[in-house]
Image 1 (cartoon, rainbow over the protein chains, first blue to last red):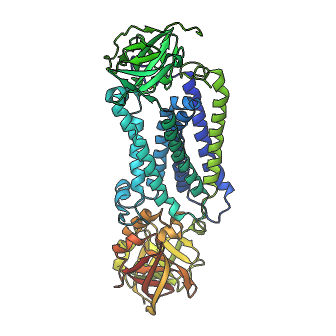
Image 2: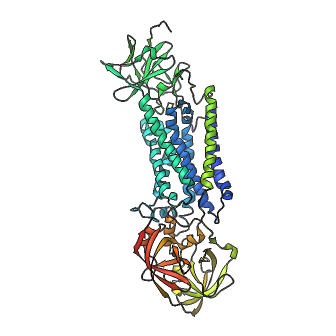
Length: 352
Length: 253
Ligand code: FES
């Protein structure tokens, strides 16, 4: 959580995460660049610059595919949530790998002429009206700009500065970037391919991303949070028997906002489901040492007032709770973030 | 698994026991996935074919008569062990610059040319040394061989820039290389048509305009595509030259 901004708040899990990710990228580049020229039994030798550009380009594509798989995987199976934890470092690294790819191309295919190489990138091919022979470089440039924007704004400073909703919508650019990369590759290298092994791995990775998103959407539909039953001004959340100590039940209000009702030390409290950090689902978190802990990056809140413990300053709205018979009800009018609400004791049942 | 039994990961705390094995498996999968990806993508790249600069031949110096159009050509009159008398060599400058600007004024005269050969099979080009070191006027006129018309042909193949095709870039053709090829053509590098059916044993043809000048920019949209063209074919020295009207290019794929 943030009191002051430092470049990265390191901890041992982030180190491990980055080590695994770096090792994977490193082994990819090492094998592609150093090993495969010896394996290929070609008559002619591919220029080192082109070979390296392909290594970095394909690596960036696979990295981006993995990054996009993490979200839906975590929705389908919560055990994947740790992969989400430090995903932004993976993203920043992808931007660097992609920049290296672009660098090799610009310094090779667009160099050596009398024109500036960056201008040449824009004017050398102007066949915009045809599909085959389309200047596919523009899709690459677009994707690269997206990745750079995302990497540059990945820090929590920007999150706070832009506000989480704006920041989140900017970060949906990752999808635009991915689609642009697919177009870039499909209209570029795939047009010339005689050996289709790369084409197949490319299609497989793209399909993986698409299918996982589809499955996650279906899953959400089936197991998504219940919409609240409106009876009068209060909204029914669930039966008291469905509450578990230390955990929440989530209800969706008619406006789309979600509320997490927690049971803590035998008492009910309700706070907004959206974490003040990146809108992570607080209701899917857990109470650890008396504090609601977000499943995404571990920001914590006092369940009675929605405030992060000092010295942190994050706050989320709270809601009033009442019991009508066995029904847990909430008042859909949110209190201002940080407002204390007296927790409601649960009746002692025989089984408890 | 009920909510309360599921291991709960918090980034800054120790990884819960129940998750450790799972995360180890995921990490290994990622690592070996990338290993396999590199092998699959890296080791199956297409063969660009044997071509390139012949630095192994060393610097070549020959004499010949200059023909400036459609692109600078040298009809060799005094060869060496690599370049025979009677061969017609396409000339090019350094990088993506043709030899046009420097050599046009010497049309019909004999020069001594020095440079590096590059070739792909029968396609040969001489890259002149930079500055004024690449050629020396010998201040005598020489005969440019008369061109011999071979009629109009319908051919299928690809328009490339001759220099990358001859191996300056590997790979140096195709659609992924199109912008690079266009940039070469803009710089007056001679374009070459690679025909899918050889004529008289030749599969590489220099391409110029119908008027005998350089290829019109309207043809750049077709560079790198597999196309069908209809063009007049001529033999100039021992080189085949197509006179191509961009309107008579049809994209096949
Ligand atoms: S979204 Fe990051 S901690 Fe909640």
